[in-house]
Length: 77
Image 1: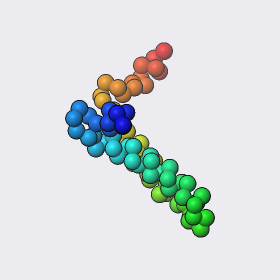
Image 2 (image 1 turned 90 degrees about the vertical axis):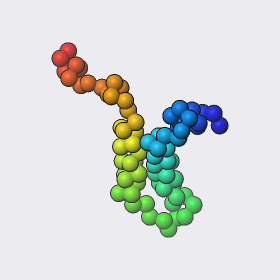
Image 3 (image 1 turned 45 degrees about the vertical axis):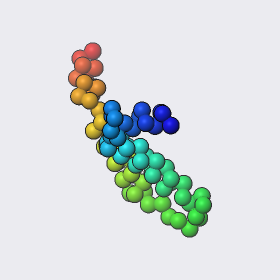
Image 4 (image 1 turned 30 degrees about the horizontal axis):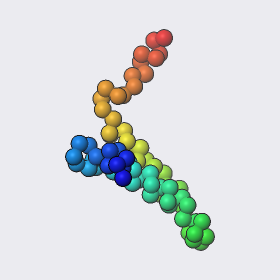
């Protein structure tokens, strides 16, 4: 699966930040849909939001400094 290798690798090594982003969003999705198969399972909101927060934080950490958006330029217009 070339697309997974190209997305999750930084050069020749696996990127921990990219793997964390991918896995936390994937686990949050699975966690939200568990009641489909196990009706008695109760989804806790703080756990779901925690997985999304972890994915968002690791996605934020993967940004390069020149990719950050400067909002001060937009306010001057």
